Image (cartoon, rainbow over all chains, first blue to last red; front, top):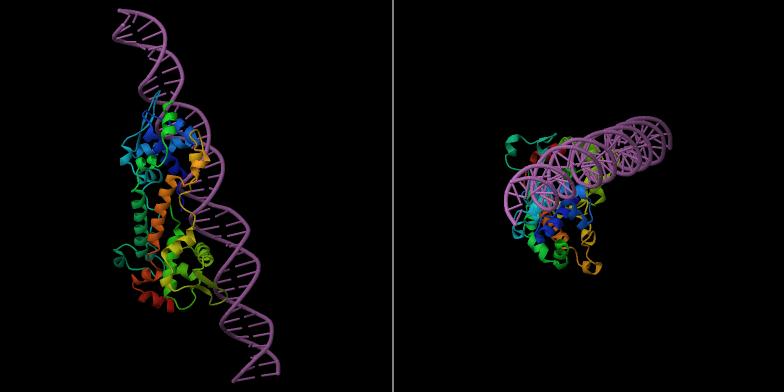
Length: 150
Length: 150
DNA sequence: GGCATAGTACTCGGATACCGAATGTCCGAGTGAGCAAGG
DNA sequence: CCTTGCTCACTCGGACATTCGGTATCCGAGTACTATGCC
């Protein structure tokens, strides 16, 4: 199980955007973090599709957060980049092969799928407990604000 | 984020093995579940490397669980197949690019990495709460035992 | 009848192709700001 | 001085290569059972 590197990029970008008063272009965000400009742009598009950031075009354009940083959770960003599909997908192999169960015994979810779903719920609940604002609060943002002003 | 299909296969196989009194060959396990024999064999090797199942060779050989089903958790199986590497890997981009932090401010883990690690801990804790024995207890094993006896 | 031995069929194990998704890159369409000219 | 139109640089957005891990397969090495022949 592997999480896309874009998740890390997007989270850092959201922290930066939470401190910015003006739109920040994707190329600028990439420079600030030392990552690929074009590939970061792709992930920022995902943030826009999810309603987390809003792009503005033309000169002096860039991305702006659409909600207060206190109302954007880490889970929101992770799901925007990585999608909302569950990591574990039950293929119902209990209905396949020699010891296949009859369909009428499969009205309730497979026990294995239930355990995996519970674990992912716990994972999502944990991620939803932290907001972008809290992340920004854990680090010194004075230097960040100064750089953004220029 | 996507979990290997082998995880589902391995969990089902462990449930079957928990009900078997004799070694069960990998090819037989594949038939029982209607999955690829050779690919399942690969995952069973992973279970063996993790000390969950033990293979015996030669005729009438096969796999046997190495511990009581009550002492094998779902997490054990998931980590045997999927590995123990965390899904989120911090690449320390806070030390890269224009707003790189000085190394002395990076003695403690990045706040983002901490949040992600906490979530994965919650995920693992949830998976560790269920054992193979409990999974086997949720379904009717009479038919399974009968098929295994033949 | 008991035992040694050779045969055999069955098992696992690692080395080898294949495929899809994540990663990374490029160029074109669109837009807003700024400047210049005219009133 | 204000308005209006144009220009232009800058932005995003989607379409196009490349790399890597998961998926799937095959054949060889090794072993335990079994049948057979001998004592």
